Length: 479
Image (tube, rainbow, N blue to C red; front, side, top):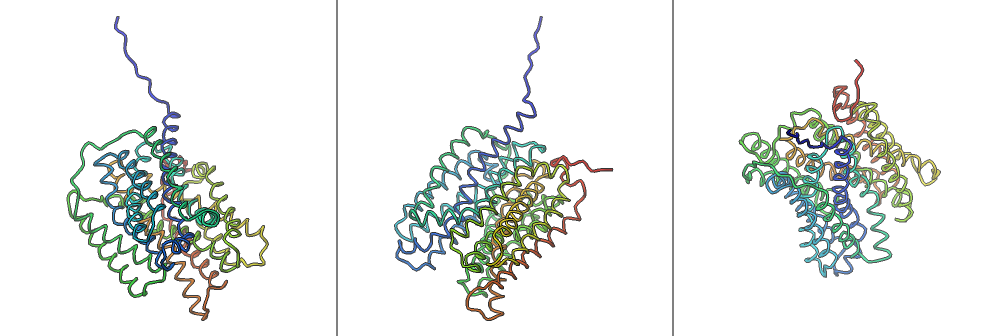
């Protein structure tokens, strides 16, 4: 008698549990990366004293990190396919962690700049490749939970980073803003080795060197121009010139990718409506509003209200709580209402809460401020998760690497664009009424403009089909 050998297949629950574990592992590394990008700003004056330079000189530490990251982001998807996503992700964490150590041990500005440049390299590979790992290991039915997990660091780090940085700088030294990454990085490496499977593509095209150089130049010049607009230390004409050069290189790169047989970035993902809307058109505008608020809110309380950094941090805790609170019901909300309705209605609520900040004043009761910030945090979290999940709802396996890289590139642009728009409105308003410093009326205009951008982007999602992303959200459309 011959016995048939059977192999027990993992249950759907075990697949879902595995994808959540992998998403958590990736999120730990993302948290280190996003926290580092926001925590440093509060320690720049102390670092300037330590290095014996003017505080304005320290802005190069932010700029060189940003530009190095921009230069290497286009390479991330190809590198993950060529050498294995797990291996590249491990390398990115290791590079970032070691560079953080050298940032904390820097004895002068030159050493710090070199260490920050290396950090930027690690960061450039981390986000796109980490997202690829999650996409490969999550079923569509588990994608909302998985994406919700990995977008959490991007939501929370901009809120808690400045507060944590202020605390560390005040009670410890600036070195610990970087040394704090060491244990997080070591934990991240251990978790990746333990839980992330080693997956590789069987056939990978040769590196498209021309495409890499063109896309890297386009993104680098574009982000450099936006960063200089935000800093306000470079002539506006020069900043706009850099942005224009970045746009030209980006157009040339796009034409190149459409013409060659094996491009570095496969632009066919933009033919998918859900990806195009959530990442390029309405999605970029929505992220501008999302990314402007963590910049504006602390300034409102510190400059507009005259609060200390610690007092402003108390208000931000309610904003942070809103971000966390929505995470628990995001999946259910998308299942009940679907992506289209959530992005439209929740987007309008988010925009209204942003515009509502224009009505705040030092005499506004704290309870009302807390409630408004909590609602703003809730709606921001929902919008961010819905956008990031819908973007990959209809992406095929062959498009994942390029789509993840393109998404990361566009999110970097929207991050700086949001801050640049907010800063520009603040400065224009101040110039218009002839003030030497920012006043409460300047913040009111900024919140109103950002809220309007968010509202317009939310209404754009009406053009989505009712069943957009239904396979991921499991939303049942009534006939």
